[in-house]
Image (cartoon, rainbow, N blue to C red; front, top):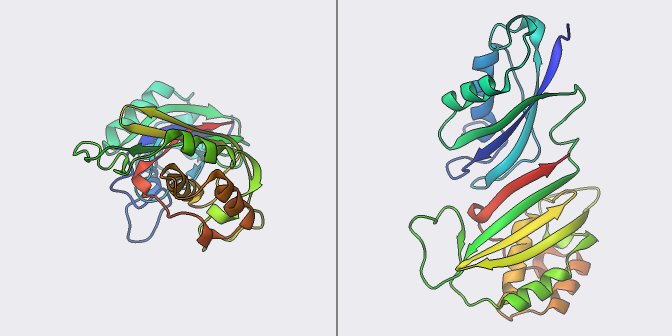
Length: 258
């Protein structure tokens, strides 16, 4: 009988009242909330690894997390190494988790699976409410931006950013990496009534990269900068030349591909 087993779960959450994904001292986080419930169910110390560390206020529709359990010493839901009942585990998790965190899938995976290291591609979306008045219902679900935006100008500027580039100009200045190169395979912008949806797909993202890109593209959508300016900003690798960082509450982690 296998002793250590690896479980993968997929999570949907409203990040409004959380200080992001990663456990922090003196703060409420998604990781902490989920780990506490898992430890209650499996009756052992559990550390989960997320596919990415979403910031405070960021939401998720498809965050993936993985964790290992010592089934030989489990006194909880997998007593005596029992076969994982996915439906039972999901039901138990969702009955104990806060209402703003929901498990949408649970399964046993090979021992070498890791939610972050095994990921091949991630998809994020950013929503903007683009009209003259805000929304009481959606105020923590999208970024209210009342200025007129030209969709053609937005799309023209966004095309400059697709492909494999150094995105250092759009990373947080406090973020230090050996490489800032990422392959942005998709950046699409669609309007649905008053809502604008920006969709990003890449092999990975730098800290605050999406929020800084959206802030820069909004400048282009207002006609304040051109697509050529966005290209120059990209190649400059200088953060201070790019646009402002937009708020976290418009950002969603949609899907992680393996």
